[in-house]
Amino acid sequence: MNLLSVDLYQSATNPEKFLALPAGVDPAELTGPMVFDKDYAEIVRYQQAFEFDPEESYAGVNAAKIAADLLTLKWAMYQRS
Image (cartoon, rainbow, N blue to C red; front, side, top):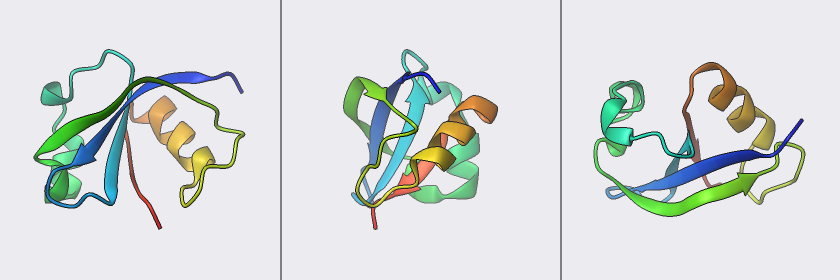
């Protein structure tokens, strides 16, 4: 799978929760993540245009699930464990 360029956002109310969006997508246009978890109602940008590799191992996250969610839902919620 190819690298995905994503913008990462962090929950302002729970710093362990993150939201990944395709680079350039405005999170204000999304309602899905906030419906599922109120911690995503207020987010701050964590990293812009991150080159995400679904085949790489990232500490505490399931990269394959994040990639699948980005490709199907156009957003991915995740939490560091």
